[in-house]
Image 1 (cartoon, rainbow, N blue to C red):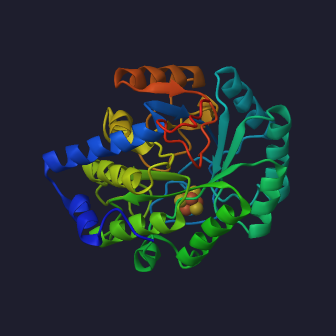
Image 2 (cartoon, protein in one colour):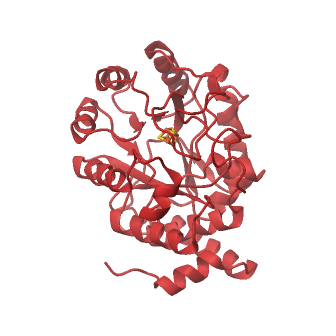
Amino acid sequence: MSSRFSDAELLHYITTEETGVAEKLFAEARKVREEYYRTDVYFRGLIEFTNYCKNDCFYCGIRAGNQSIERYRLTLEQILNSCRVGDLLGYQTFVLQGGEDPYFTDERILEIVENIRKTYPDHAITLSIGERSRESYEAFFRAGANRYLLRHETANEEHYQKMHPRSMSLQNRKQCLYDLKDIGYQVGAGFMVGTPFQTQENLLEDLRFIEELQPHMVGIGPFIPQASTPFGSYPQGSFEQTLRMVALTRLLLPRALIPATTALGTISPEGRERGLMAGANVVMPNLSPKAVRKLYALYDNKICTGDEAAECRLCMEGRIRNFGFVPNMCRGDFKESRKINRKVEEVE
Ligand code: SF4
């Protein structure tokens, strides 16, 4: 596949410290974004339903080996109640996110998906529950799940091994992404910027991987250390470089749905807004019960852990409008053709 940029050009944008160059990149990314999505920002309601995980990723605060955090699981009833609150607030997408928690067997996930689908036949259901078998993914899809988020984290084998225990493999992760796409999910990949041992060439590989995979969604956040993990004393990723990766992703995948991540908002007070200014077009306010928000601590100092769902929604709306963007509560599906100045304009 031919790319808009050569490797040398991408590396230049990845590494540049020149403000003028970065600003031009962001402006170009905004222009491309507006051709497809105007100034709309899609809202997804995030439900973090378990912070148990059987894995031990070296960067993650809810890794199995972290004995210093309090663990929780939401009941089916609590999950459905979060959906009910979200629906009342106008959300049409629910994102169910959790660690790889063995308690949530395929049967339990199916029960959750089926219940949500029955109550909300027209809403989008997104799963973000890690690596499972192709058969499991197929069963969830048949039950009504539409989208799946699975960040690849790094597309470089050597780097992947430095960030994960031996029991995990990049090959399997990539296979999961290809399987999910093949099954028919709208698929989200993604990576962190500034993780320990990451090189500029690794970031280039991340961009080339998403070009190859062509995911519908791409989540990009800065690495933020969590004190009780093996990577707890490494420096956090660069805010500016993360924005540049968001902008480059927009330019390489013009129609992608790209969240302005909470991690961006955590390392800079207007981080999410700046993410939107660099080409992102999705936000994911939290719908989880307030009591458990702080416990889903993938990294330290995570923002928005003390607000009710309604407050989060209103806060995000205000922030977005301040920067000239328009909140859009529709499902915000990926569309094959949606350049807005084309004849067949799609209005949601
Ligand atoms: S990054 Fe995901 S798979 Fe790895 S430990 Fe954290 S929740 Fe588990």
